[in-house]
Image 1: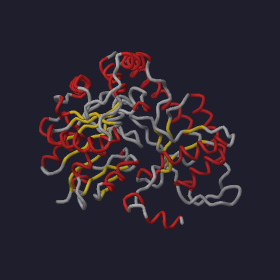
Image 2: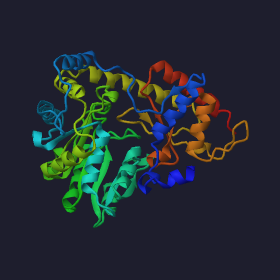
Image 3: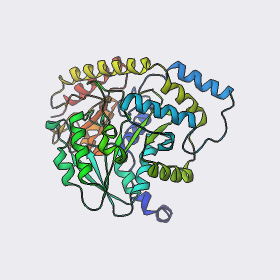
Image 4: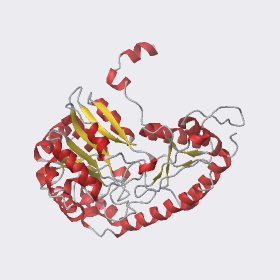
Length: 403
């Protein structure tokens, strides 16, 4: 019966991989349900509550009767607030017609890919990459072409390597800055070079995932779309989950040329229509209000970054890149491959190591192959200081037992 049922499923879903970040978090919850004290460092979720003034705006929206369907692409006054934010923070010049509000940045990326990519088209993905990029391209029946950086060059590939990956089938270049999973940030000079690549390849769009924009430890954030010669060639993706601690509210948005924004509006109208009315009203307040709570959170993340970097120095075999943004450590851990647990199980992959750490230390992490880098693991430091200290002490202890 199971085989017959499976045969009813489409190849689309059968070929799709489960998100390993969600998968590892699920395993952590299962272990916690058995009574274990699990520290979950697998999820990319700020542990801070949504700022009070944003929650108050949501309550007011309920009282004001915002409980009906919204325009597919978002309320006009929210789109105006997004345009103002883009101009204020990113030097991006958009009008309301360029904005589409979605149920999270993930949907904004999916909308864009589905509107650009036909079967057999290619998308150049800069790796290490966020887990869903690959699967979204596959969903569109496109082919992902991965161009990865290494730890020696801060996990950023050379611009020449990116350009060399472009063919006559390439529709887009997709990247995140600050990066999930590495925390790497593209500089203004690097983005200028990427803009030159777009100029030389006029049929290629760029999709810039800037969801971690505010969690930047190195100074100003730069947007590719702010460069004059490619303003009409870049889709800028952003949202409220990370910078405003609003993961459960589900609101992302994109700024794009009108022809592409119209297409995203069209496709979203057949999938979800407009996102939650209450969230949209709260988002106006988030974008228009004092940014101090956001910047305070960033300062805490920087302190935590420095904390986990210091703690990881005591763990043999952890080779770290110092992240300039986001809230992840992405250590290279191939030192442990071939080592055996006290029970005699050999660590052969990053997944083996993550499962060993989860089962023995009750700390949840994510294997790097989910992000296109099989010799690494991702550790979120979006957790309280005391939990991070305890987690790294546990990891150090169980790894010392491998031989």
